[in-house]
Amino acid sequence: MNWLPRPADGQAWVAPSVLSADFSRLENDLSNMTAAGADFLHLDVMDGHFVPNISFGPFICSALRKLSDLPLDAHLMISRPDKYLEPFAKSGIDGLTIHVEAEADVPSTLKRIGELGMKRGISLNPGTDLGDILPYLDQVDLVLVMSVQPGFGGQKFNPVAVEKIAELARRREDEGLEYLINVDGGINDVTGPECREAGADILVSGSWLFGAEDRSARVDVLGGRVG
Ligand code: DX5
Ligand code: ZN
View 1: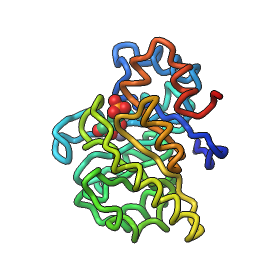
View 2 (view 1 turned 120 degrees about the horizontal axis):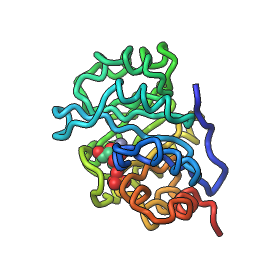
View 3 (view 1 turned 60 degrees about the horizontal axis):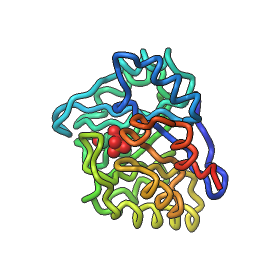
């Protein structure tokens, strides 16, 4: 199991979204991103039902495991995550994040993810009230706040995410909880630092990071590693 603790104050872990990588030269693209300082890899799994798009499943996750030693965190945008927990565990990934809007029973699915040796994540869409995930905060290792409607890379950041991040950070403090706060969608040099300052521990970025000439400079900007 590869995982990371909370980052240092003022910093964030950077998680490139593999969806934006060039799949015809994946090994190259991922080692380049690792050399640039990426901390996690974010794997977007889409079923064409929970979201309109189809991406990849456990089979590709196994291949990614062979290509990278970074912590691999899969974001399941699928209607029935409970049906696929074993194949994802076997693929060797480290974390599995389910959506609260999916059709699965949330507490038993989270419990099973933990029993299978993976970190447990819960995610919510921009239009979903934070109240919907509050009952599960003591059962997760990670909360993924969506700052775009899931389904596609390259969309515009929705600022509703910033308030949710700040509230999650407050609650974690007040209730002595340990989850990492992760944010996903439309993250760039403006929105990334905004989320980090609100309390995000992990910034997912797809098009902005993979589209860069100098990826290392962009990783540093998101991670808060430059003056
Ligand atoms: C959206 C995905 C995101 C997406 C992020 O459905 O969950 O992870 O790939 O890409 P950007 O950073 O381009 O918004
Ligand atoms: Zn994602």
